[in-house]
Image 1 (spheres, rainbow, N blue to C red):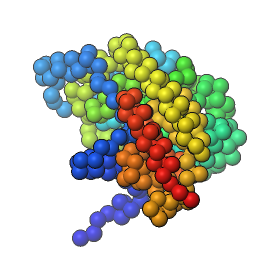
Image 2 (image 1 turned 90 degrees about the vertical axis):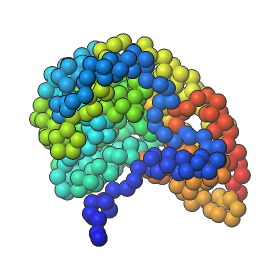
Image 3 (image 1 turned 60 degrees about the horizontal axis):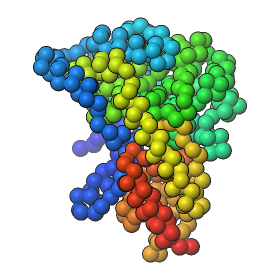
Image 4 (image 1 turned 180 degrees about the vertical axis):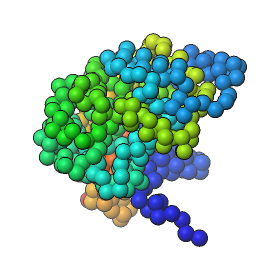
Length: 397
């Protein structure tokens, strides 16, 4: 028997791989501190859970429209107007089983074999792999830690060509925590204006976990809005990763295309999650703000702990819940005669010897780095960084 060659085009997400390895060690009785996974360690707010229970009691248990309940798409339009100053109609919204499916729908709707897709590094692991699944050609633009891992207008102008069809980025960024300001996005928009055939995917799933005080969407730039596919969802801002609900806001043409794709993959998203989402989007954000306040405290502590680790360089994140330090000064060092050649080796060493789960930066397009999540309680964060520091100190030349 021979499986599809499609499987050879893309890789398993390193984030899920590290989580799996951590669970296996934990099952053997080893105390693993997980600083790898990208999900809030908070519970879903009670008022959202109550809405889901009510939906079950009211028998919202049947197939849903592929694009989502009209009432939910109206609630998303309300949220976009309230929080982002963006006007969309319900026929421009498609609700999916998580933002990952929203991204997959978008890429499969736009990219043909051989199309060029530009992605600034670092980037979320799935971007490049979904492009490869669609048989597009990925072109990376390397950003610098000195620029806070944000692409500059000059880099963008140099990277885009007449062959470019799609540009993918996130703000706040996973894994770096970089947040693009209004001024920075407007400067990038001036470059995009010179390339009118390029679609732009703006992943804003970490919108609310923002320490800079400002979230601005590139979709706010009027002359770009029709080309922007805005990706968002419930997972990060509402602590609802397991509920699996994401959405796009886009032109009617793109929305219809995504709906057509989704109709053959999953049809409509879970009915109970949708009913709960209506309440989430129509309610105030008090619970979200309380969660973000805790993340802000953790970020402060993590930056302090990083300063205690020698030979590590790290830009301070303005959003999300990760730090993305450069650790290449430890490459070439050894433990029990085994050489740490790269970030992959370092992450495996930290997992097996320090018993801390992290993610290699090579998965995000930055092989000098590792991603460390602070979506864990303060006690585990402090113990995890103590183990990382001790583990790195045990390495020898």
